[in-house]
Image 1: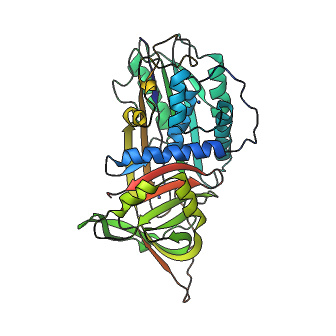
Image 2: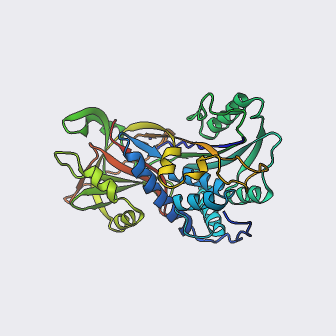
Image 3: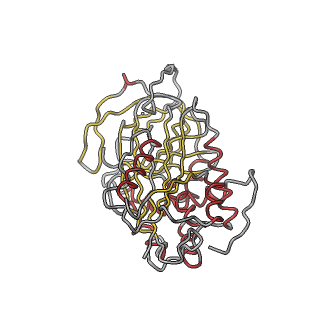
Length: 404
């Protein structure tokens, strides 16, 4: 029996598809809406499953969705139907792939002078096996994927180390061991990797001299001193009876961190209520209600790293056959049957500080005086956050901070 493993990797830093062969559309101007909506709907589905486990959450729905969508191009029959449902695809295969490419083209066009958002896809194929031409054409053309031949059959651990070295290089050595010992065996035939590296300064940097160690309340009557950054400036801000939300822009135009902060209460139950209501629609409503306000922002300096093995979560979301020996990935490579996904591994890292990124930079501190109203946004308790691209509407990263 042969099987396929998918390995996904993602790194973020801040200071931080089946059906028989069809011809894909050649339309560079295709709208990003299809893929963006699918990615975001999938993000909220996945978040709600991860939230049941408690603690901090941090992952890249864009990275996971992109890697699984590449795999979807080789799926057939019920396997493909389940993947399409789980990944929330609304269009046909051609439209989805072209939409994903349109999003990636947007990110590839970002100048390194503004910040870094690098996305890399690579497929690692067992020596002696071949990808089917249609599948290979799709992942090359629409995902810019590279290909490498490794000897899973005879030297599985050397192949594992080769893949880990590639991931480390693509993530600037922040993720070094995405594949653990024993995760690659002599039965492995294909590994798909997706790596993301994000590095950008805040548009409005914090002054480190204003950072103070103050309590962060993880739960009622439980707090820990943590460095709280402070800045008073103009931000897009919104609020209602349940929460406040704010947009913290980066120097990369149209990319921001959006933070949802529950109102203070005695039982710390409002975070759970907000999580239940999260959706693409609710996020769109919140963003549309934001207005430029003077805000005194207090936000923790923090670092977080999360590792996920996702088969059980994806199965709960409806993607079950993919992980069984009767899966149908007959459109993927030259193996007649027995090809299935053994694991989906996702690792994510984030670091937030005054500059917005680990890279050194300077910026002028603007001092504004006057009697205008200043909103208070004090993130000294659990909050939800997104790294969001307004041009495509895609959630790149999503997290929940409970423990510091």
